[in-house]
Length: 178
Image (cartoon, rainbow, N blue to C red):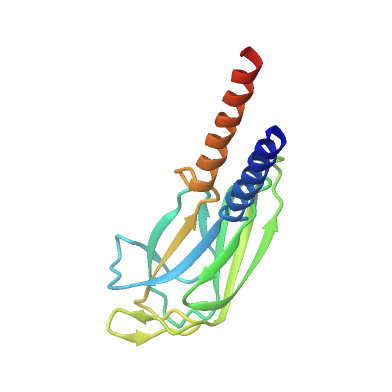
């Protein structure tokens, strides 16, 4: 009977650990999406010349209005001060492709990363109902958001794993002192 109880708790631990691991994203995600009715300022205006340079923080959420003189078929987005070892993935409802290039700086603890967004993406709606597959036209708005690596609340599987560990530990202590 004792062996069956230990086996049951080991299976419970394994299933909980697999579920907890499966719910955690691998990399932070940078989202570049269209916004409606942009005005300048706020949000911040972007002229389209050179990369859009932003200091890195784990909770980036900024809105921009593109005020350039021509269509923006490639968006260069640059994060500075990124902690070493931080990886990213990129998604956009404007552009189909997002290439990332790390740029080494003189610091050993931080680096700069460049996102180059190109190509026609899924059709999206902006302002007066125009579509924007793969470019930003003057007057279009867009947002840059980072979804963090780890969520602020514990996952249900992690709570089950912790709770079952406490139950097993309590059972071991009870039998040892009995």
